[in-house]
Amino acid sequence: MSEENFINQLRAGKQNAYSQLLDDYQQKVFGTCISFIPNKEDAEDVAQEVFLEVFKSINKFKGESKLSTWIYRIATNKCLEFIRKKNTKKRFAFMQTILGNEIPLDKTSYFTEVNHPGILLENKEKSATIFKAINTLPESQRVVFTLAKIDGKSYQEIVEITGKSLSSVESIMFRAKKGLQQKLEYFYKSEN
Image 1: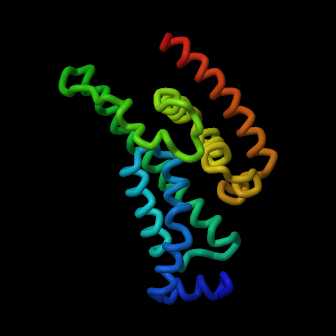
Image 2: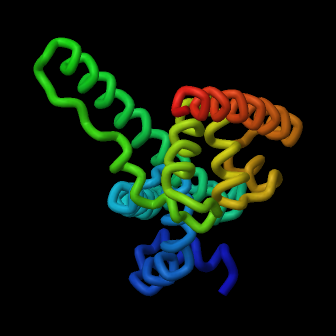
């Protein structure tokens, strides 16, 4: 079946098309989510939100990119939305600890999926440190770095997902690598 026919079936609300979409993209979307959100339960929740958004918005899909690119764009945006909400909650919890109202959370337990296939490291502590460092990068750098190095996307796929030019993606990636290197040096110095 052509992609156009498949999209038309999705728009028509055909159950077999929705089942096919889930079969084709469930693992891929989860892989993207776990790359941004290294906690299995949260990544699964966000992946479900991605498919709800796809089902809800399929009629808005203009076909200017491939369906897969559109789905990855939604997944990336949902992950960033989740991270922003989580960071807001962390700041609120931090303010409560300063005011003496709340017991701080142990952040290290959050990194449940540091054995993500994109991360080939000997131990979980290093992986958690890397995820923490990635999460301190500016958003555009975090997106490009995560899609390229953890999710394994090509620069061309990242261009399509983010809507940025190739030179912009390359420049952002260069800055992300440089920033990450500095942050990791800082993290390792402060741990020792």
